[in-house]
Image 1 (tube, helix red, strand yellow):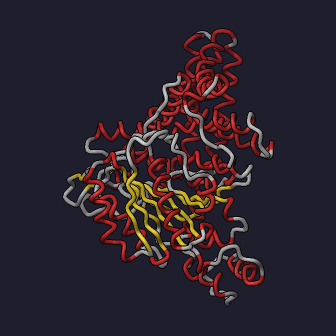
Image 2 (tube, rainbow, N blue to C red):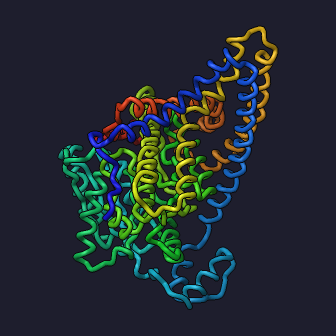
Image 3 (cartoon, rainbow, N blue to C red):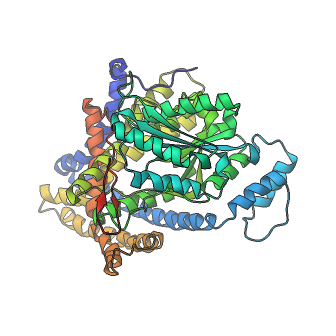
Length: 537
């Protein structure tokens, strides 16, 4: 099997280190360029900033259009009769009843006459739930949401992957939950990931990989083919929609080459949205919107948070990486290189509900939010990995596809770190250096007008965000809904303070080799009906 692993720090030569420096170097160069050019070419930088603002204005319009399209798709697909449609794939052609999509009948007819790689009745779902020190109040609703699926629980395998470093109480809780709920599944097991495993960073990747190998042993003992098993990874607070499993099964069956595909549902951070403070509500809603927008651009989708793959693909990639804290997005690249570019991510327009960041105090919550975003932004470390694996290792990758994917990866992280800061402050830099220049004086005015028009799109965001809200808990009064509207005045601040700085922070650490070698688990807190908070074990 070809080596697809990230090199250890001691194995990274000068070339690899140069690649790690690249994202941060580009980001800092972009951020410093308004200052430099304001001195040496003030008119040039003025025109550049206006052009940049107009570019992002067009992007903002596009994002609003995509979000409307995405939410319409999401709304439609949650209404489809997925369990019945899946059954009809197995039983053959039927009369249309009017509540299924137009493309369903063609899939039924094709599978009735053509070769079928996996039949619906042969599918098993393995759900790997990773936990560190989350309380029962977090974990149990996740298990119950899985059992509430419109899918036969005797076709489900629950794997509760817990950490030895979480403490003895975590293990006792995991075993108690498995003992209570195992009879309802085909099989359920609690798997303890030993602490301080050689060659592993402290993170989720090592935990779910260890659990995945235990799952592989069980499947071999039962004689279940890995290609017939779809594995979904879930965090402790991830609660699948009731149609997630039948919809995933349907897509897997009709997929002509399921081994070379990952399946990405829509992460929606709404579980506790009423309980979270305004800054994290804005960020959580923004993250939900971004995932919906990405789902409408399949060439941009990468594995994120909860995602699914065939067990066979996981075996072929030796499961997830144990050397990085961003095992989800990195899994796309591992699979891409393992199969010489024969790998795609298919969007699944069914949500998996997750928590917004919430800790025991307001200040702890603000800090936890930044820690979560900087961990996500550590995906910039994949830039060096892709350059090394794609362009300096012998492979059969399609060149143009590789180049396009790499440029999207690089541009995405550069924009993450620079766009909020450039959009917020760059228009004032030429004026700082050239206070007597007419163009420099007019630039803030022009920028303000462009941004004002662009911000009109916030009404689209506001409208859709209110539609997304789950029912208001009885513990909150009616005025809480007003705050859900007023919170959007914080959007410019949260975008700069969290999105921009988290990206720049991670890329700067990567530049200097200050590696994030530990997965900082986001604390999960449950607010009860009396408004008391239940934290980790």
